[in-house]
Structures are given as structure tokens and as C-alpha cells.
Image (tube, rainbow, N blue to C red):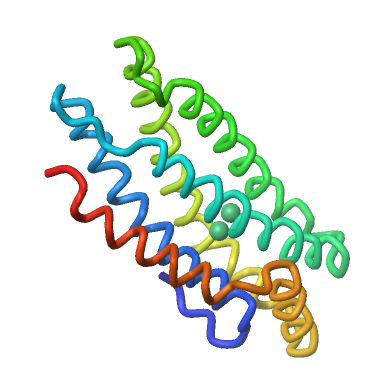
Length: 182
Ligand SMILES: [Fe+2]
Ligand SMILES: [Fe+2]
């Protein structure tokens, strides 16, 4: 994970990344187990619910509505930076939709479809996190003034006043996944 010394906004978003990275490792392991072990059913609805609530509704909204809205407003010449961010988020949503549609595992085909989409989601998200950590966030760090940084942090907290509680809940959930599967 890159060290972004200055920006509290980016540091806060990087805490989400830490939790998401740990989640993705468990998610992949659980999917492999589902593929190899007929008797293992996993708890895929809870996994998709976590992706919906923590990654989609929380982390991606903090990035899209606050961080990128700011870059687009203050550095319109740099708005190309957001292209991959939005594109990846959008691609991820197609995978999530397809996982949700198949999560009953009512037939072999549905289970296969879930796993295929889950693996696609997992590698997309892994690459996306690594792109943000290695390239995007370090670049954006140079575009945020100290005053703007404080404002952005406040905006994120206004958008989700329960940030600390969400992070704690998400961490506990991800930790609980180590007991699921082999
Ligand atoms: Fe993102
Ligand atoms: Fe992110």
C-alpha cells in the first residue's frame, strides 16, 4: 500500500482499501472452495451483501461523489484520471448483478455462473485496488490542497456520518470469513 503522507482524505479511503483487500483474499478462497467441494455452500448472499453495502454504497460513493467530484471541479484538465476509476466501478457492477442473479445455486448452471462472475469480479477488483494505490491516489495527492483536504474529509463524513462504525463492522465481518471454508 502506498504511503500518502499528506492527505487525510486519501488516508481515510486507504483504510477502506485495507479492508477490501482482505475481503477479496477470503472471497477468492471461498469461491475456490465452492468450486472444488460439492458439499460446501458458503454464505454467498452475505458476501454479495457486503460488496453492496461496503464496497459499492460506501467506498465507491466516497470516491465518486467526493474525491473525483473534487478533481473534476478543481482540475478539469485531469478528469481523464477518473475514466478508469468509473469504468472499473461500472464493470464491477455488471459482475455483482450477475452474481446476485445466480446466488441461489438452484441449478449447476447457476452455481457455475456465480463462480465465473465472482472470479471476474475478484480479479477486476484486485487490479483496480492496485491501480488506485500505485498510480491514481499518489497522483491525486498532489492535486489536493490542505484546505481542500479538510473540506473533502468533512464532505465524506457528512455523506456517511457513521464512518467509524461502518469500518469496524466491516473489519469484523471480514475477520469472521476466516472461519468459512477450509
Ligand atoms: Fe475505486
Ligand atoms: Fe478505491
